Amino acid sequence: MDLTTGQWIAVCAAAFGVGLGKGGLPGLGNLAIAIYALAFPARISVGILLPVLMAADLIAVIVYRRHAEWGVIGKFLPWTVLGVCLGALVFGNIGDRTVEILIGLILLIMTGLHFLKSFLHRGRTDVPTGKAALGLRASTGIIGGFATMIANAAGPVAALYLIFLRLPKIAFVGTLAWFFMIVNWIKLPFMIGLGAINLDSMSVSLPAMAFAMVGVLAARAVVEKIPQKLFEWLIWIFVIGAGFQLLL
Image (cartoon, rainbow, N blue to C red; front, side):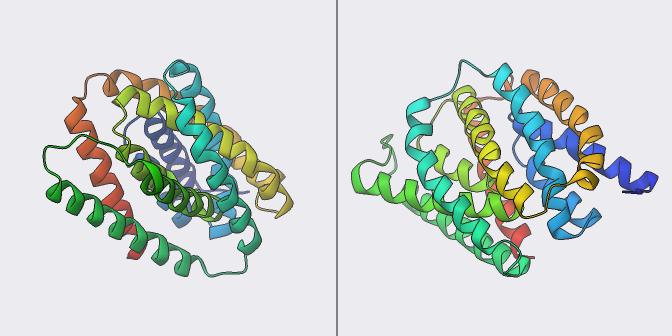
């Protein structure tokens, strides 16, 4: 691809933001999705961004390798894979705008329900169990898998699920790092088969991957200094902002 200087700056800056997001700074990964979507046609932007995400995943897993909650991943992953398969079936056959609106609405509705629950159950520290936990896991997993296949946009949905579990911030970041590395490798054959990843797209992805890796390393020092309560509020702001962004 013959990119302008401005496009290269946008691509590399957004890739650095991907790394910061993977390293635990909420919202920046979602911003990168928007930048790539503005710089390239929708299908092409998804294919260019996936290898960048995978490069950031690799560094994030190395940095947070001891902090994953594998029980959470094991329960959440099958539902997400189901969503990925559904997304692969409709990729290219449904309007991007329709998908964005649906995801945005679901994010905002689920966020509203969370704060309503918090208001009604003030002082409680329990996490969802039984049928409530299964329903939350299944709904967010399928929606997240579908969203990540269509637009690499599962971050808000996965964050929404994990924050319900009240994981400590480092465990939160480590679990997301391992989870998305696995999911993105599962997505890779689908993306190649659908033509979203090819030699042209990789000519843009490869230089950007280095910036994503540096971003992950830069994020660790910041994450460790953020108080737990502030960290959770940043996640909720990220989820709400992502919901409105997808609607607009």
